[in-house]
Length: 222
Image (cartoon, rainbow, N blue to C red; front, side, top):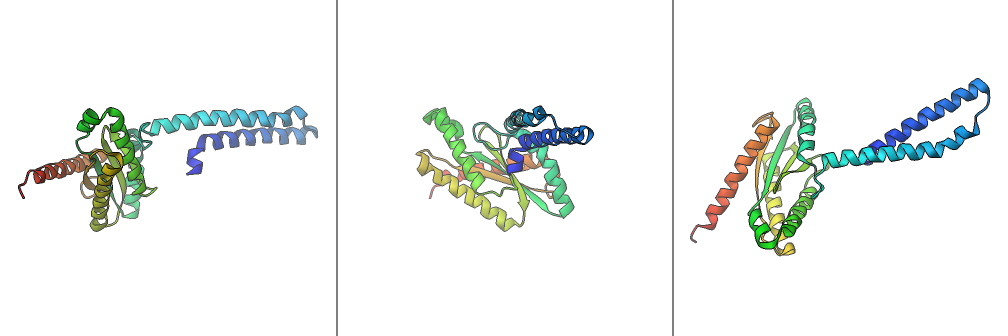
C-alpha cells in the first residue's frame, strides 16, 4: 500500500539518486576527486525529484478516485478488471460482482438536502470498505450506485455478505436520522459472463428485481 501511494515520489527520487551517484562515482574514478558542488547538489536533487513525484502521485490518485466518497471510480474499475479476470482465470478461480444501489436517493436529496445525500453516500462508502477485503475493488460507479468486485468462494458466503451489507446500511438510518436502505444484485465471472459490462448489466438487472420485490412486499396487507 505504501509503495503504491508513494510510487511517483519513491521512483523519481530513486532514479535521480542512482543517476547522480553514478555520475559522481564515474568522475571520482576518472579524476580521483569529487567536486564539492556535486555533493552539495544531493539535497536539491532529492527535493526536486520528490516534488515531481508528488505531482505524479496526486494526478494518479485523482484520476482513479471519486472525490466525494474516496472510493475508486469507474475508470479504475474498467482498467483493473482485465487484470483481476486474467489472474482468476490462471488460478481457476471465480469472481463476484455486486451492484449496490441506495433506495429512494432522489427523495433523500429532495426532502433532506443534497448535503445530507452526500453524507449518505459517504457513509455507505465507508461501510463497503469495512466489509470488503483490500484485494477487492470497491468503487462508486456513478450517482448512488456502487460496484464491488472480489474473489468468489461460495454462494453461501456471498449471500451472507449481501445480507450483512443490507443490515449495516439499514443501521445507518439511526446514525444519520435518514431512512437508508440499499438494494443489491450480483453476478459471477465467468459463470454469467467474462465481459465486465455484461456482468454489471446482469447484476444491475438482479438489483432492480430485488428493489421491485422489496417495494411489492411493502404493499402486501398483513
